[in-house]
Length: 76
Image (cartoon, rainbow, N blue to C red; front, side, top):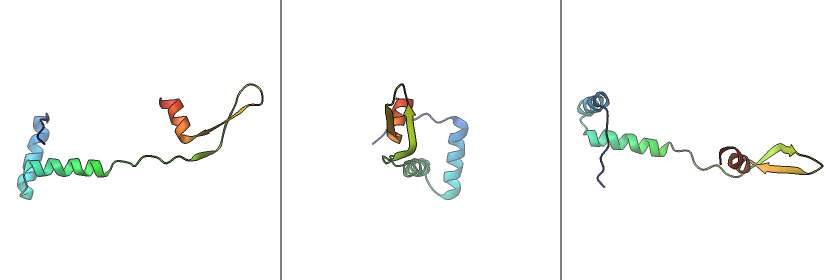
């Protein structure tokens, strides 16, 4: 697939120089960086129960929340 990206001139010059020093193409350097970024992506969190995460409201009702529930409340 072909795409167009805007790279600031100073950064492009650095990439081009590094590619020349390593005997690689600019495309190879950029693809290598994209692949590393994709591999570094954190896996989705598994659903776990919080220990002692009980919120007391009015009366005697207690709410037991998981990490996922808390994330949804805090971050939408």
